[in-house]
Image (spheres, helix red, strand yellow):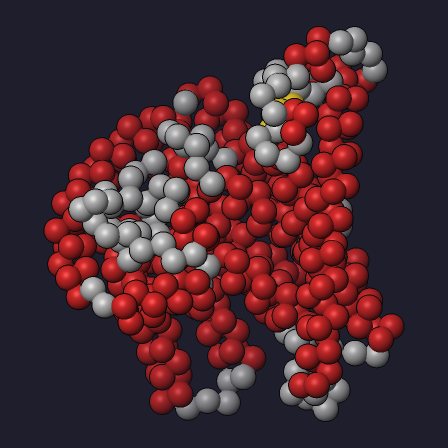
Amino acid sequence: MEGGVSFWPALMLSSILGWVVASSLFDLTRRVRALTQPWVTRRVLADTPSILRVQRFHHGFLDNMFSVLSCGVSVPFYTGFLPILFWSGHSKLARQMTLLMAFCDYIGNSIKDVVSAPRPSCPPVRRVTATEDEKENAMEYGLPSSHCLNTVCLLGYMLHYVLAHYPQRDGIDIAIWFGLVFLFVMLIGVGRVYLGMHSLIDVVAGISFGLVIFAFWLMVHGYVDEFIISGQNVTYFWASLSLLLSFAYPNPELPTPSFEYHTAFNGVAFGIVTGIQQTYLHYHHDNVPRIFSPQLPVAVFLGRVLVGIPTILIVKFCSKAIAKWLLPIVCNTLGIPIVSSCYVPSLKGSDSKDNSDGKQSGYLQKLVTLFPQKAYDVDTGIRFLQYAGLAWSVVDLVPSLFSHLNL
């Protein structure tokens, strides 16, 4: 068993590293884009009349309804929902959904930036962006629809979890649950078209990729969970995985916010895995009290939320401040050229040549020279550490506070 635990992580890291090298040598992203982008772009243009027909039913109520539904399956919603799910006692469901969310976000955004296909043209399509989050989403490429992909995977996994852990249900109950999930997915798909955010091909691709990812996750989620709670060198493996995934991410035709979203959830996954690995036997095993039980009444749960939410926000702020101070120092020490697009004003517009032209003595600095000598955006590391700190506090620091406060 130990041989298997060490073999598969090593194989995974080696495969990703091999993909990074092969993609760089053979320019695979550009080749795939050349094959897929023209066809998808034609489909988006061909779908424009269908979108306009859907938007003929324009009404303020429909605008508000579909906007609310979109917010209810967005990344910011799950960022707030998942910590509460951890504190409710459903730790296994919460950590699986967190990792699945990170996986969906990475795959979906990678496909977006590989294909780099446009969203429906506005005008003639009317685009409704009711929130700042939706305005940022509109800056991404179109195919596939992340909302559809995430909804299929996360609602599907929640349904799987309920049926697996609460099997005392008859066929009618199960049919109703399946019907509700199907209806919700269809509403999200129709809503993305109605709001002018996606064409039909984007929605179909989002649902299709979501079904494939969901089926794959059902095959591996048990092994992933077992590795996290009882594997060896889990933190080192996940740190290496996070680094390689950042380098494996494809370059889009034009810059988009997609990589930022991936970096944030990549950090969340790392923080969750690190925290669970350290505190599983204390706060996250299968016998922890769950909400609505005598050990965790609603009043105590609300107390947890009132304590937990401010705490993780403070940790997020402190993690960002520490990372903004520490990462530039570390990079300069190692001779890594860096720039900052947002977080560090002194590094904006700088190519950091003086960092790499200086004397580089020592083993670590010589090792760094093996990597491509380009200026790296330090904001990526800052964002990763910021969200890793937030996620770690959700599963480690905050449960410790609950224990001390008898919550």
